[in-house]
Length: 72
Image 1 (cartoon, rainbow, N blue to C red):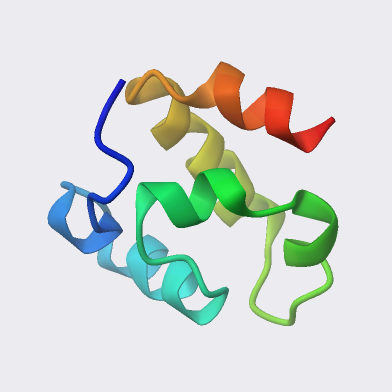
Image 2: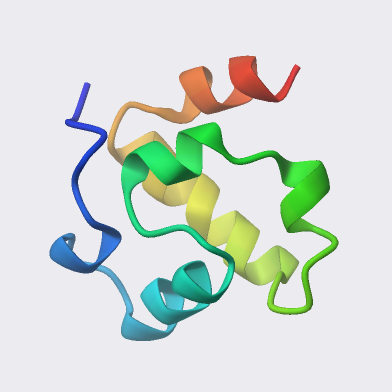
């Protein structure tokens, strides 16, 4: 498992994804894991395209199952 303190900006990600994440209040992998989809989906900067990219990122870093568990 990756360090949760890694900034999304430090990862090799699309700049628009990183900016949209920042607008949603997500700066690190830890922020992502602590977030709730119910809360994020109500914010004006949320999109399901961004969310699909987020899930792909989490899968790539071995964090998808942990994120899913925390959503329950």
